[in-house]
Length: 344
Length: 257
Image (cartoon, rainbow over all chains, first blue to last red; front, top):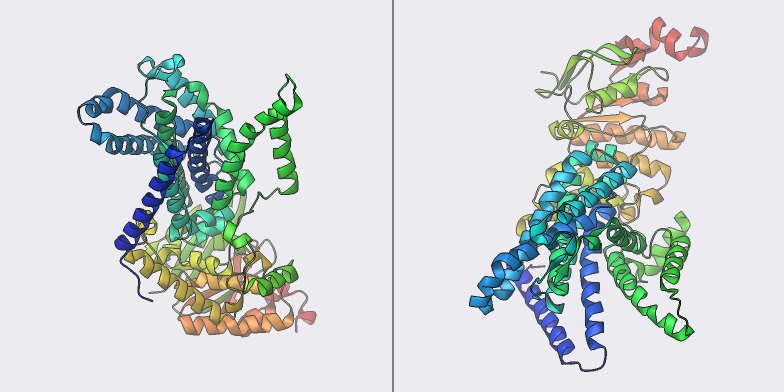
């Protein structure tokens, strides 16, 4: 089979992807019904959470390094990109309005790059640690970042960073979510991704295969932090406001829950869990209205749902597989299943 | 020049001398056995040869590289591959992926290449796939290529581990009790496989084994270890006849015959 040159094939892919996104964004903007702003907002938050969950899945799911600091990397990217647009880029856009999108992308990538640097700085010394110890170090890192930001007056400190330009939208959020998914998918099906998986499965065996485990752990951390930083930037430029209290360890924890719920290592699992866990707390607002109660059982139901899901499917929605591996296949599905059953 | 030369290798854990003044030379294409009672230090020697432990004293030279104190992944890149006493497969990955990971050092391309699916990526991946399948064919595991490694029967897991080690295209293969837990028929097949692997891939093999039939049957030279010291070495016939070995390892002289 003859392959198209990679740049051509990817260019076509990108063009189709952008066209679909533009059409969706245009359709969304054309919709007129009460509450559309609210639903659009939830859609955008879903997109941001997908980016966060898929990027954390590279660290926690593929490379098997339990990080509780994702909100910290998100904060680094969010604040840095907002700093750039607020203090520098918005003046440029006043003069050249057409440069807005390009400058947004530059700010997002710069935010991602700084988050990646932070990931490298945290990763290099702490990735000698395993399991619980690493989790505690990353948790501490997230808090350090938050307290640092709290004390920088230039970017708002405890009052929060206000007046960030509203440049982020449905299109950009899903554009970057799509790119993150693509990067993650292609990485995991390459030698790099296989090295991540080997590190997760058995570090001693991985080293015996010639894999420098520390190098690959740091690599996973840097890639994951980069996309968390980009997501932070998208978040900042959508809400137009940042506050250090948005990036507590609880935020990190929410992202971890998405990854675990979806199935550690499953990209499609992370995506679906991100969607469910963004919609669920919003959807549960209705419960209060139905009950005609002044008490809101929303978070109780949310927590119980998580507990039930984890009890019934401790391996996550898809386990370590992907959506298309779980769905029954038409042809070879039967013999494969029989083999699995026989082996089990 | 020998392929591997270990001189005066000693390792101490606190006050315990696990291996003392160990000397070993392995020539190209040689099949050497390392035997000894439990706790004699055999696996410790493997761990020093592969960089898991750094010897307290002594030198190890492999193929012109001084490897004492090198990291395991560097030593693999020099051309030493191994299997483990208690199987260490990547259990949740497919059989095929296990072998592809075994060849990791040969498929170098950047993460960017992987993300952009460049020609370099496709070339490397096609080669990885082809050579992994070829290895699986040799080990008769082709049918199971897409099953999870943990679902293979025990004997197949042992053979998969050898296939994975060979994917690194080593010059020296270290097998740590390859026949442990195998029945007689499987052990016989394994003996043939090890012999065949040595000839087909033109490599040297050093193996630890408790199964005397296997060791005596295929090794050209045997080292006997007891309490961290080399007590005898020679051809299987010499070792079998050596009274020190019989006393230390094989048991009472009357029963050993």
